[in-house]
Length: 182
Length: 199
Image (tube, rainbow over all chains, first blue to last red; front, side, top):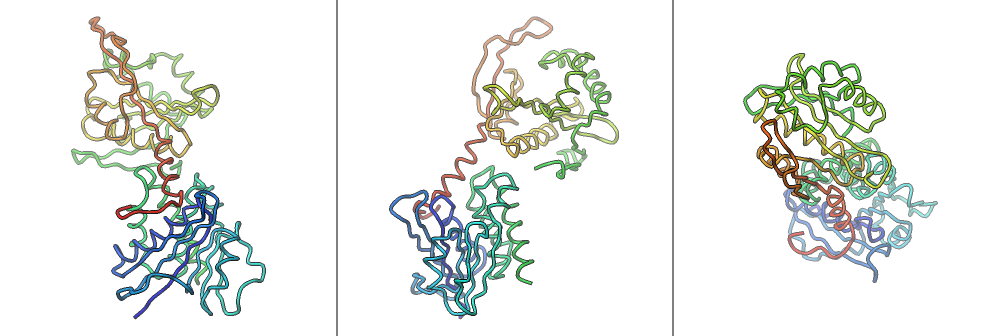
């Protein structure tokens, strides 16, 4: 039974929960797997710490909480500092390269890859889609889910009229992730 | 969406096709020929005197400054439709764009106007324009339907504002699409507040 535990972390307002939700939807609704999502917030909404715990499995998931993730997807330095000690030995860290500086704090054997998601999102015209770039980067690097499943999950999740730009953001992150994964 | 999206081949409802591409300054003569071939009654409902050399000069200038973005639809080497996005870079309506669409009589009810309008809405949204308006005469039911499908709604009615060649007055309807709301919705779901079942 293949089970992958993921924690997405960042600041409220970055779309952390949506990022986790899309990964879960891609797995459970469009990818033929099982998935769970747990959301965690700081006392304020925007600007405070926020994280999503996502479990993706080939089998039914009995326990949805993620204590020691296999993969971290991080969009803020605070989230990096908070969650890096929880990462499983040999796990993977995917981070927003302009907002997170690992600065040698990575445990041995951990695979870490950064993506300038904010810059990519700004180049596409909306900083707001940085979380979708991160989803694409996650899909490209890990290969955990078929791109088509993630694409459908994005389309299911974003407001009407924003689909085109969100899909561009997804593809941008995915292509960058594929390059990094080689 | 940008210049890389064009030329764009579109398939029309009757099985024919057309190519959408941005108007270049060198296409002005062909564009004016297209407009001169429209029946006078139809030219009358256009805001500008599109057959006049003064209009062509002003349109050309605004094309170069970027205040006007124009898409033409070509069938072979002939212009069969044109759509324009007007915007201004200063003043209190700098967040507003206005769209005007015109199709050759033979190319109506085939989806050409919808394609031109949809592409201009996308261009406007990607340029950061927050509100797009279009003016339609009350009896232009087809045009109203097209813009309603693209998310426009009736924003204002100017009673008896338009008078045709026979002297009949009709209401002018200003339809608007507040595209900033689209991204406000995206911002709302990125707020990282609890998602509920069905979100």
